[in-house]
Length: 217
Image (cartoon, rainbow, N blue to C red; front, side):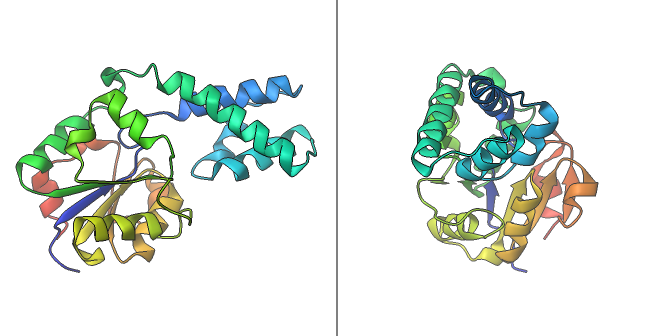
């Protein structure tokens, strides 16, 4: 592995927790369709695309719909979700995330976002974090979902660094696998049981410093 020259961050669960808004938007959709959608059900939607999430939701509710109806429902869910994120405030940034991003910036480290979310730009603007990223690779720029490494490889390319010079911060197993598939190091945020393949597992970015990062070289 090369010297670490760049940090790539997933968005949801790493910098901000938008999972609650996704859950409420999916739950509202399920209620309209006449069934319950629980927090436990929601676990199955972590890190998967919008259409796959909708298919899981419909399977839970025992519903069969046409592709046309599915597209309409997925759009409706996204509109519901967007009404929530348009009200987000900078105080919703997860503990330590902004401080760590600022420290990286001060040390001259290159920083990119690697998120499947098509709403990533909106969220970063609402949180007033856009200026801390040198490149933003979101769901509008990739065709392959994690565990495919496309989002992170495009991030490395945008920063003009080699994949082996990057370290990824991820909270989902598919994201850790994507980082490793891209020949990058990875810091997992969450449970060691789930993210055990990462080089280091922490509870959140409040536990991360530039010095700790350099020890992973």
